[in-house]
Image 1 (cartoon, rainbow, N blue to C red):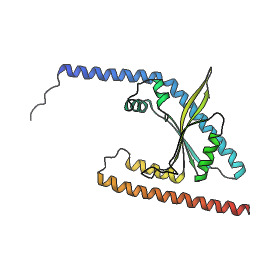
Image 2 (tube, rainbow, N blue to C red):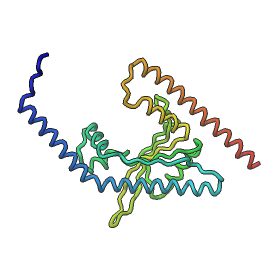
Image 3 (cartoon, rainbow, N blue to C red):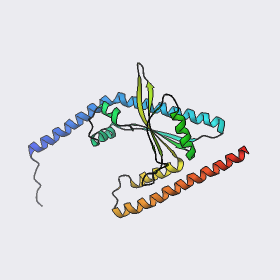
Image 4 (cartoon, rainbow, N blue to C red):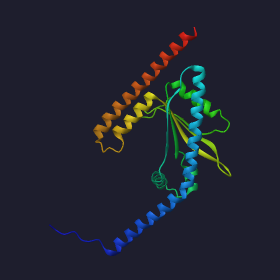
Length: 232
């Protein structure tokens, strides 16, 4: 068996220096981002609290809760670094705040489709909330069948000596939409699938998305029927 040639010493040294420089850059970035990440966590708490208040107040007059559950997430420094590099942006806090709007995320899972729009409208009517972007994937689903209402909002957080405006991505979806999205992610995320399997699963997942849409519609009709009967 032929012995492999050893890498040139200068080449090895250069690669090690590049790795060490990359590590040092990331460590510096990570250290400088801690305060900003804390601000994003505070913004998440502000948005989550607003939805919990809306859920509580709605339940008093309608005898039900429009929200099934609320999930939150904060992107890791590693994910933020990868996204900045992918977008050809510098590893700076300014680049994060100006260009990445999904660092802080709040997902609201609702019982019915009309709850989604009701809660979104209630949130956006609040005078300290500014809408930055709205994408309605319920009205116009993505090509793979994904459905959800996405909002990018700006919310103030009040710190010890200042007020800071932070951006948060809000996703609102029904239980059926959440079920489909979770399973689609589990089945296909980072899987090395053949083109044939990709085509077949894409078609079948799209059919499942359409079935979940029909389920949402029928459940909405049943609820409306019950509500109308109680009012008559």
